[in-house]
Structures are given as C-alpha cells and as structure tokens.
Image (spheres, rainbow, N blue to C red):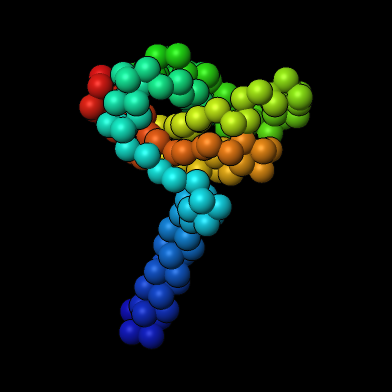
Length: 142
C-alpha cells in the first residue's frame, strides 16, 4: 500500500472520529453555555431524602424507563423525541411548574442535555442534568 494513501485514510478516519465526538458533545456544551448545571446522583438523592421537592424528568423510551436500569421513584417519563410536542400540547398548564426544581435524566446523559435545553427555551428556570444518567444512579442505588 502506498504510504501517502495509508496516511490519507488515517487522516480521514481521525477527522470522522473527531466529528462524531464533536456532535456527541455539542448538546452538553450548549447546556453548559446556557447555565444548565450537571448534578451528581448523590446530591439529588440527598436532597430528595431531605424532603426537597424535585421533579425528575426521565427522557428515555418507555421500555428503557421500565427496563433493567429502572427509574427514580416518582419520575415523569417524557421521551426526548416527543418533548417539544408535549410542551406545546400542555401549554399554559405547565406555568406553575416553570419555577420548580427539575432534574433531567436519560441512560447516560446523552439525551438529557438536549431535553434540558428544550425545557429552558420553554421558560423552565431551575433545570439541572443528572450527571452520569440512570447508568450511574442504578450503580449507586440499584
């Protein structure tokens, strides 16, 4: 194989991998730029145990929500791919909840940053993202 061709392939592969990483992290970067914090499961659990009223929005698919990793007790399952539509449908009914503390979660925090951004854009003000998602929560609290 021609050495130049070999390096061209390696360069193309590295570039493709870089784009994949970039697109995977864009929602996280945007969430941080909007001031949406990531919160550790231990902090969320401690606040819940102390009686703090926290709305957990789990944006996984229903089969994931009821699957192996389970879900946080009392969590609301709103799929990330339907979130915008649901918010439009509910409209003014959500007004009282816009200043409530909300923690958004998914399996590994890949979908939750985008969902948190959507909530923020719809006027929700106390949003955070569960760091590590349900994968981390499940390891800690089964």
